[in-house]
Image 1 (tube, helix red, strand yellow):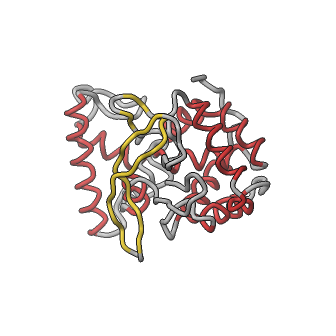
Image 2: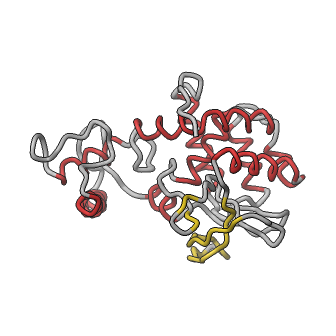
Amino acid sequence: MRQLDGTMQATAPTAATVSNMTASRPTAATGGFATPGAFNTTFQQVQADVAAYIARGDTGARSDAQPSSQAMSLQAMALRNRAGADDGTGIDSAMQQQFLASIKPWAEETAGKLGVSPELVAAHAALESGWGRQPLKNGSANANNLFGVKAGSNWQGEVALASTTEYEHGAMLRKTERFRSYPDTASAFRDYASLLSSNPRYAAALNTGSDARAFASGLAKAGYATDPHYADKLSKVAAQLQRGGGLAGITPTGN
């Protein structure tokens, strides 16, 4: 999360994003686990998923999940949902498509302003928001801040306080920071476009077309995030979207 008001202050992706990027998970092709350590990690994650399901009173995140009384236990459903993730974020394909459909018009509009493909903008929103599953909150309301932009001293709008992870001298630190809060998704995308296009530090990221590496490296080198692996993470998500056909075949749901 982000550069704001032209300053050098920036933060890394949310802790949920960082942890999901590094967590071990099942080897989907074989149905097994790569190592005993990976098994232990995944078992602990599944237990956490089960606890979340019970707390919510539902049967899992996947739209095709069946009630445990009919087909499988909560543990089995949690394991299936985690194994079905295809990008290391713990989000299955159906939820990714739903998120992309919800932001498609704004991603396309923003891409035109920045001179990049819509997939790069969508990938950035996906990385920063955990595919929409870790939204910043302004009290009980959604802050609609999909890009993790902080609220600097010049910000005149609403503010949301949130805990985030920053890297300082190679160490990960948890901090509570002030973030911009928007009335809707369109405002978030337009402010993001304004932030990048008005600050010359981000010039290297602009007009990079569909070159995910150039876009991600331009943002990282400009100080958009302090995570030393930020460019790699953003490039990975963008490449995934490009391989999947991008936003062309997705029908927007509107906001």
